[in-house]
Length: 472
Image (cartoon, rainbow, N blue to C red; front, top):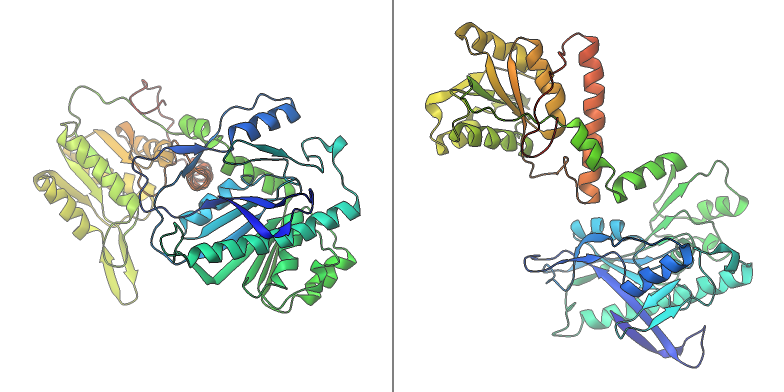
């Protein structure tokens, strides 16, 4: 979104009024018929390639363009990038906030941003240099202070423009923004500007400051809520301590280890978990003959006795296999929990789904389990004496390796199949939420394998043939 602030001249090129570009992320009411947009505009991406000497590949996002917005009003977050950054630098943060109901407005600070491509195709470059070429970057105190002051004015102008659009009938943003809930979030120089403007603009209710040193302006403090995220700070300077003392409202400082922060960003922003998940997940080919049983492992029951999303995914996968003729008997494991004075179990919701598939006559329940080991031992006690030795175990993708090894350890011949996922997609994660969920699941399963192996509960599975959906 482009707009021109007619009330002030551009401080970098005084012949023109200040022209700014804003990128919005917001919760969409539908994405059908819309395509994912690229991470950056073509000309900006090519220019960064020139600066870095690297032929950057195209990168897609999890956002679509011009989709209708969910009815508001929504809280607003103003996002200001690091020194000479670009307005898409924090796309993963903006997407995450939008997925939680926020509208995020990222500001390109023209003539300071490394490059800005306006809708008419003009590419405006920084007059201060770029962090991609530090040899030509202006970093003197006077320039930095000037750039921070311009940012304060830019954020104020953007807020004016968004208020105008929110109050304009028929505008895309009309009545969708809640100006009682406005925060400003900035990184580095953007953090300095965020601290300065939150103390001066009554429309802004809170600030989020990411890895920004305190400046003379920002150290004056504020009575509004402030969250400070800092990486690699072992010591704090006098001005930082002065800022902390001057934060008179709710305040929180989170110190992050640089290595851990780097690992987080690596996982959240790259597809590194995809090959890890594919390697870890066990997927056996389905045999042509019918096996003795299909076992759907439990995963939890909610306070209203409904299966949680993971448990429902596993059971639906087992029902599909049964309907396709892969098993003679359907086996589920009972999850029983105490909620206050009530004892609830998974039977009711399991029975409802199984009856919809007309499979009640083949259904066997293994009672009261809380661990995968208990599921395997109690399933063996029910099935093996009846001669049912060949089974299909269906569970969550990251759980397949450990679960199936446990069932083999108690004497079953196992075909291992991953369930589809509706809450998070861990086997082929596409966005940062899925990637972080995949990391959590992977870490949990690695520790589980170590524990189960130490107890002697695992039998390494024999080589299997690659089947549809993955490899062993």
